[in-house]
Length: 509
Image (cartoon, rainbow, N blue to C red):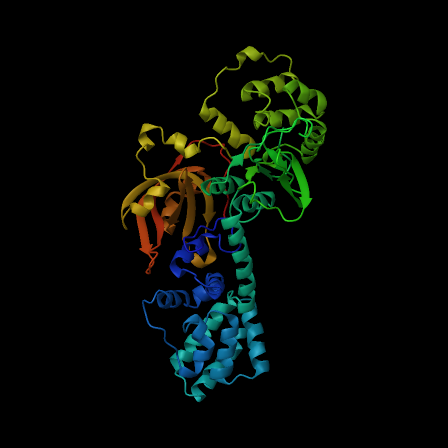
């Protein structure tokens, strides 16, 4: 999963830079994951260590060592210094630094860029290496690498700790995807991805995402298990009154919800297990609804625990709340299990506040486009058809390349891509290059924008929620058996489409 950069939401390796590096580096062992995390940092990048390591990892060039005495320090990283500890050991072996001097060098690297203390070690490092028989060019190269680490290089122990967390979170995503996305969504805002992108990624990983519903949803997102089919006719005396086909697991419960042979939910302490029920569904929480208060969700949950809601009239009678809160719920279609028409429900809720509104002025039929638009206004995402799929029905967009089509394209091929703008990045180490992430109904597209393109299309880049990008593909394929490709679209022309109120967008990182 990591090798194909399927790491949306995975700790430390979800960024655009990491997802671009993973197919190239192809980590097969834990230590290679440690290197993966450490190498995508300003220090190794500015120190010129990334490409030599990649070429050697891909067996495009032989592993070489500056001197045989340095092999024990550099062997695990194929002759390229990646970690701060390696640079410190090199100064001791090659330049004769004492332990105390090496520690002073470490502190100087950590403060480089603030007070320039690293420069005082240059002469001692170079002279020490020359005295020990090393070439001046090697001494100068080592010092430049130290300056790069001062810009932000990882200690090996730090990277190993991060790699452990990255592996754990990737394992959970692979084997328990519903729980993984539920936890991420309940931790928002965080990371690179808004709730819409996490939900779409969950669906691509075959997680069934259930809509916000006052009959089932809590404030937080939760897991729901479908009870197995009963082995014999259920006994009405033992069935929970008003039990529904989906039984929610409250996100704050510490137990696991199990079902006896008649489908009645029971709670047992312990880690939740999915073996009997299969993969759980992900129920969206009411926290997604703009303008809704957590206290309102608590009122709904407490009232629902007494007995299920049976109708809109029952809900209005038993769940007291401010009219504006009812309107927010109606606008998010949270009453869909109690009412068949979203717009009528919203209208009826508003009519309780404004007597002059006439229900006959609301259209009886509402289009899928209108529902999708309303979803984005109220919750920032939709479980209906993806907005790009709706736009693709129009003739001028019908034959555009989709994200899923890119692996079959050729390097340098001119293409046009239509997608939601989900992320904008302009890293300080990227020499002014900007990266956009576009999402369509089939996946994501990575777009590279050079500085002259950024200047020409500044308004479109800054304000475009939906972009049509024209450019050429840049495809590099990793060597080896898996032959995984890293695909970028080098953007040349951008056009902004006018669907202004879609809010599933992240700003600059």
